[in-house]
Image (cartoon, rainbow, N blue to C red):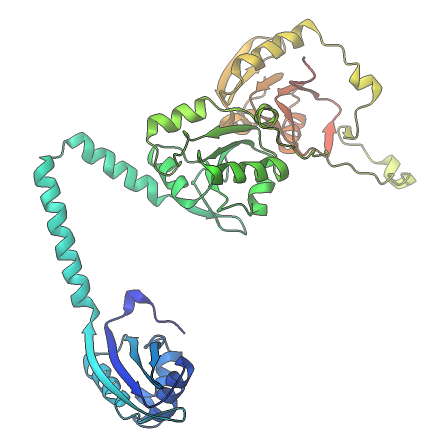
Length: 419
């Protein structure tokens, strides 16, 4: 078991010389074997290591002219007396493997003293920096405190423990970034719906989220960012693409460049076409099993609101006739595209509210006079279920998500339907 560096108090350093060629494993074996029973049960090296009171024995060896020499280090969280006893015990070892050997305890270093010296030196550097820069303005202090609080809000989301902002759980939109530091940088500036993939091996947690969220991939402006983006476009349901400036990384760019990059995001399909990236086509889930004929008992029961399974569009659906009212909604959808906003209308076409998409589901549950929803986002099963329960007549969105059952009472229109 490896000792926790945070609890290390002392570091034993010893020199070893052997009259022959030896390996690291020989040295470790000799230490355990020849100290066993020497110091009693309380300082038995195996028990100390098992309870994490001492760490791993590190050995560095060099061989020359048929002889070996090197160094041994061992971190401990024992007290000072126990540590020096253990160091002295090393000197009782006289053979390593088949060779005669000598071990000399060179030093017992107090790790805390070393850390304290580093703290003092660093404090001096910081003090000099403050004195050079002058006094800090009150506004800067407030900003620093605010950013520190935001950084503390980072979470580990899903089975893959992906670094993410605190709003990733409930937000209808999300931003995919490369690593934890990218999430932290976005949190500094109040962007709390980011999640990191951690490299080119995209976690299933992120892939599943893209199927029901409006997803923007925001990657570095280097070759690594391009590779991650290519994989995302092929295996995940990405809606928009944003890039950091060329050769720059998301984790280090300032707020102005972050906002500019996100504002200038482009549809994923357009980006793929520009850079000749093949996007894997994702089919909507279908239920191919034929329903069992209802028994008499089932037939007599009251039927819930009718729902239809989502399959390939029929010829009748493909020839959909768009009304003037729906064209109006299509124009509104174009106007709010990229804004992550939703516009709500009553049954007479009067605008009721214009809200962020992240507030949409809560608003639909609260209000009862909504007839039509036009929003800059993906139409999900959850949204359709709420619309069905609240007697909403029309849902107009960017595209269909992972929808299995579509309520017959809800007219569903996507951007493609309104072209």
